[in-house]
Image (cartoon, rainbow, N blue to C red; front, side, top):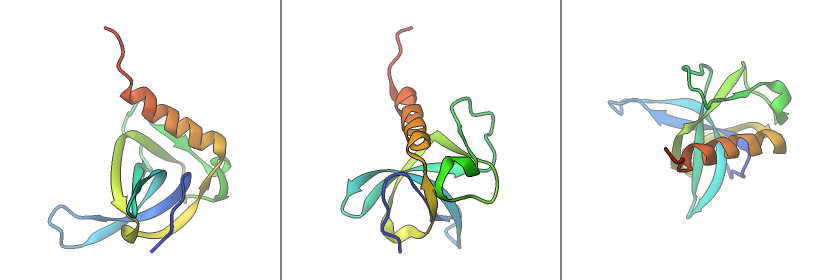
Length: 113
């Protein structure tokens, strides 16, 4: 179990759809949701043509890193309990963390037609 903090990149146990097993995947910690729950943003190694994906490379980490260039996907948010977090990969720089948060906010803002 990990005691997360905002801007950290953690490994989360994602279950397979049939719940037979789980796979560790990285995610950015965005906010404390209370009672051990945290709002996280999915990280993938493929941007999937996601126009709002935020690129993450080694220079974006104040500490640690990912094994390859990856993408935080602001449209893929979820809440997870800290007990599902198996480890910490690193911590984003303050500027990169703000960029990820800004991308989430921009996605949620209502735009006039």
